[in-house]
Image 1 (spheres, rainbow over the protein chains, first blue to last red):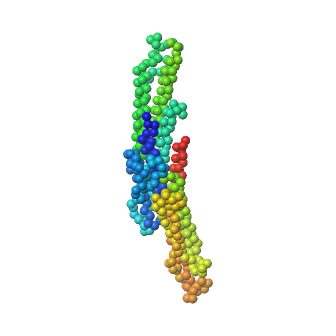
Image 2: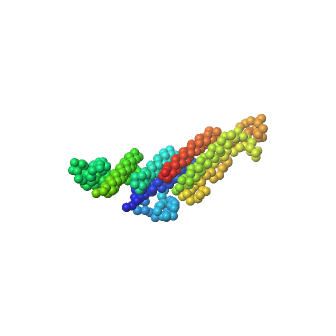
Image 3: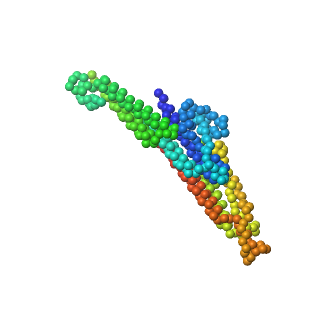
Length: 133
Length: 96
Length: 138
């Protein structure tokens, strides 16, 4: 009997991806006034699904790949992509309103995933302690 | 599900046909099976919702409710199991 | 990515915007300074913002996500006003005023202020996320 199932692994991956995405968005906000800056984002759906489909290795062959934290090799890199959009006069392409909205939404999704994995583990804990805690 | 209350009565239930049977085989097992089924279904539903959430879809209250139901059905099933085990142990302790 | 790298990214954004505010207020304060320590009229200053790529920001512990690479002086000549009695008037009686346009500085100030608030919100959101992660411990 597998104690920690695929769903838990998927949720853990979702937490990784969402946290990286928050960093990318924070990076966009920090550069909201930098001339020539192109914002980036993370496609959560594909990033979570590709990991669930069978695990990528520590693949950092492209410039956009980020190094994975932890040397266990079980945490594949999260890829970012450029966000197309209109550029202002100074070449900056950050849509600050969109980034701020995405920031809030991503944080909430992270919280939801954290709470979900917490609850799943709580159920297991309950069973493991024979219903005594 | 048949109540387990018959255990605490003094008289050996197997002898007196008027009393409810102590261990009604098919009743107990089917009740347990149903409880386990419920748990299985609730867990799978919760897992499906959680996966949807993880990949960016799903809606929050659906996930929350599915998880809560899975939690509750699991707790009920564990309590049922504990009671069955308790009943079995009580029976085994009886002097025949 | 970990939380602390993300916090540093936000913090560098806050610092850069604050510097923009400082420079804009400095320009405004000196809008009428016809004579500086070098005897010349004040020249307005401009920050030059420089971004670090996201990958580098992750890799380098001390590399900020954005920074003010340098502060340049605006070479545009200032307005010349005919004021023969003024102590800084030149031979023709003209005084050269700083090349500061208060409206322009106010626009910069508002932009920097908005940028600062955006980064502050980003920082607070990160903090809330970190607290959620801590709850898994319970």
